[in-house]
Image (cartoon, rainbow, N blue to C red; front, side, top):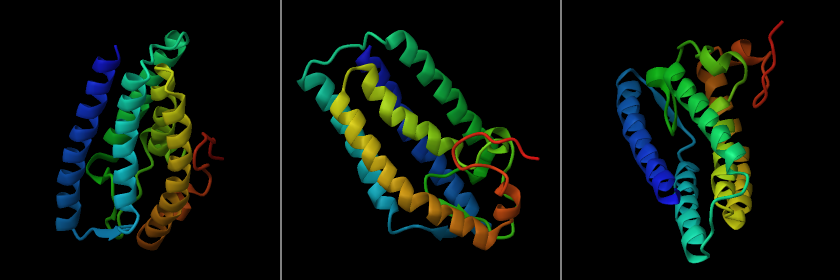
Length: 184
């Protein structure tokens, strides 16, 4: 099961990089502005090391499927539904980089109706629960902590860029960053 899940995870990430590159070209052709370029390589390194750590911990230490797999696996499937709901909601605006199209309306549909950063919530849950599915506790804890540090840098940078170039503040002032909150 690990080999299948890990292969799907790698294919998913590579596919997302192709989608992000296509969307980047589209946005830059329309006058997109990049932000947060200094921290982006750090994100790439951490996500790459996450995959390496996961496969290493599971194979070297012969980790097996968690006894809680019947809870964790459906939960992970739900995160994938939310992930692709977010990606499809953003359409050509979705990217792994911070690229803002000045004077465009902020996307506030799909899961973005309920919170500001549903995709970051999904990534955080994946980084925690994918390793836990295979009892890879070191990877789960280490990369959850690293992801928190990355998001402390990334999210304010993204929000600052959105506020600078779009109607972000007015659109999202009634929504929490990570938890659903109903607008008045």
